[in-house]
Picture 1 (cartoon, rainbow, N blue to C red):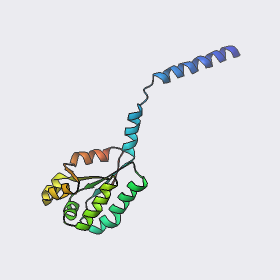
Picture 2: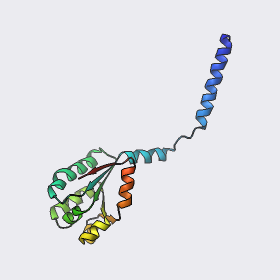
Picture 3: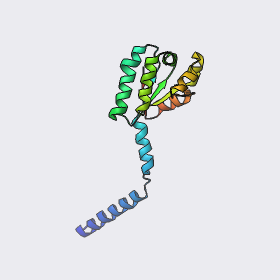
Picture 4: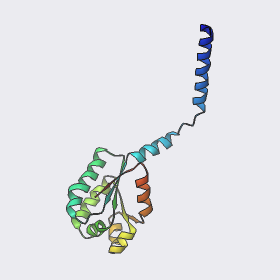
Amino acid sequence: MSTRQKHIFIILTMMFCLISLSKAQVPEPDTLRQSAQKSDSLVILWTSQDPEVFTKVVFVYALNSAKQGWWDHVELLIWGPSSKLLAGNDKLKEMIGQMSKNGITLTSCKWCAEQYGVVEQLEVLGVEVKYMGKPLTNYIKSERKVLVF
């Protein structure tokens, strides 16, 4: 093969690659943004009935994550005994208000809240109370990061 033929072969190969790449499906910017949001999203699953776990760990990390931009999205999922603890503790209620003001999404498992009879108390705090079994499963299976306390 002559040098000229090699050059033509290389040029044709490059053109073929460029044509192939141009036909490849490139995700739309919105799709890329949604993917990034999922992978840069933190869900804190708070289950403990110990108030110190909330005040010294959950609250501090969640609030700083939101304020400092460590995560694009932070969600506090109130699950089980923590829902009862929150409903009956004025100090924790104030802290939940600070979390809400700083853009942290507040959700609670409806089944759990119903078991403790605290649905209305949580809703008054701005917590979205809904059945969370399937959403939590989806969070775990997705690219979201889930911390459990």
